[in-house]
Length: 310
Ligand code: ZN
Image (cartoon, rainbow, N blue to C red; front, side, top):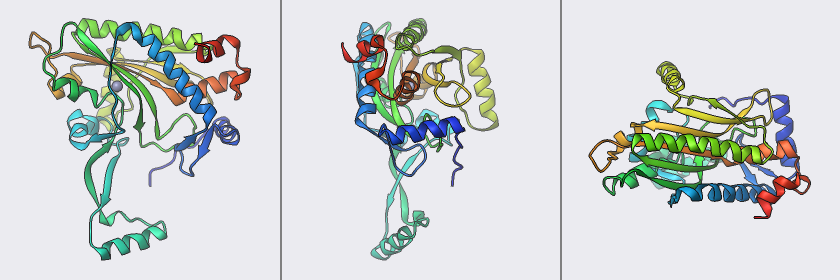
């Protein structure tokens, strides 16, 4: 059993309040919640703000299910960098006798994995992952590149925690830029300004900082140090609950990482570069609830106007 990350007293109290107010619907598993109507209303309205802010890029919309072909996850490098966060789908294969034994074990909540076999499916770890192979399959990118809006997709991270801001499944609004290196980097930097202004415009005390991904193991520490040094990743952080601010948005410059793995080329035959941004929608809703109060009817007019009167 994976260890559950403990919450601070402040985080635990915030989670209890969210559940008591029907904003989060408890499942009994840390980091897995249903969402009440008010929570979901705020989330989808924030999603609308992103759609408006992104319109200037004329993105191509793509939507994907929260499952990824196993081959795509294997090709992406995810199992090298984040084996601890990945989730894969297993399903029953066996005889009637095996099914009975499985049911018997399940009835006592014992391990019933013995008759489960790996399928061709994994859980999507980041909303941009399904985009790269689809775009690569079309052939070389038009100059200077394209922008794809992957929507507010469900993503999975295996990191059970009692902190209500660290969910095992959540919505990530991802937009991806694929093209020539300088235009991809310029896009990422424009968006990091735009994202900061957007969050501050909602009354959130957001700050931008260099960041690194939670790479696995000893080799991972080097990857993370390199990522920081090269300024490949920026995050926007907001104080939610607990002692430290929480990352609610990230802007990631992958250089040739994904393009190399999937064979994404520019018209002149060079390997393309890619960048993506992701707004963690649940974390932003939590930041709004924490900052302005649990009842959106009493939020400042300026914030309400942007979310409800557009
Ligand atoms: Zn991404």
